[in-house]
Amino acid sequence: MTRSASYILGRLAGKQFRKAKWIWESVAGDENAAIRAEQGVGRDMATVVREQANSPIDRDAQALLDEITTALVERVQNPVYRFEVTAIAGDHPTAFALPGGFIFVAPSLVTLANRDTDELAFVIAHEMAHVMRRHAIDRLLGQKALSAVSLATPTARTIAPWLRTVGFRWLEKAYSREQEFEADELGGRLMHSAGFNLHGAIRILDRFRNMDHQHDPLGLGAYLSTHPPVDDRIQRLQIRLKIGD
Image (cartoon, rainbow, N blue to C red):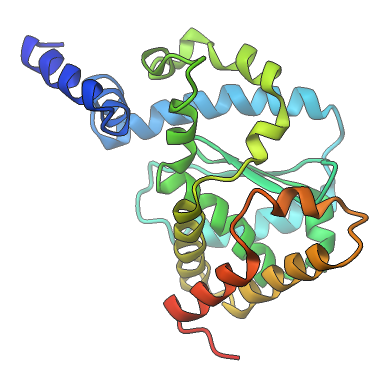
């Protein structure tokens, strides 16, 4: 790296400007280089998630998720992005995204949605939006136990030991309120462009709201407690995306 690049990076790092523009677009590259670096980080994390889940993939749920994901990915403008959605057992209906496009969905969430493709398209598109808006990597870069520079070089393998320590619960924690709203909106636009019905977004959020208000045998209350109030999410989506009754 040249002296001028090092100086600029130092200035950026000093201001914590998106962790020095994701460490100078992942070591003096461009946005696509940064995306590829995220994919390396996410791949390491995904390996740990699969190890800790230690359960067979639900094939029926996986086939449905694959079908939906294929349709959504076709509408993503930057072909460098890669998305891999996996049905993996969890204690409650949940979904989360890792940097680089590795997304995990609990089969119990597929069941909660009654296998409705429009509802599940919103769930997946919401998680894809967290990746494309860099929320997933930004959250990781905020962890003091991890070195941003080492994350930019995935071969360092610094992420797996850390994730084994903090466990799944960290992955399910919410982003900021505005990041969640942003992922809702971008996810809604993405699913709509892929031909899915936007009312599916409202239906799945209604399911979350109803489960939160009732006896919750599925443990959804803990999941929802890390997200903005469902009523706020529904209202904002209806306004921003002009979804009628």
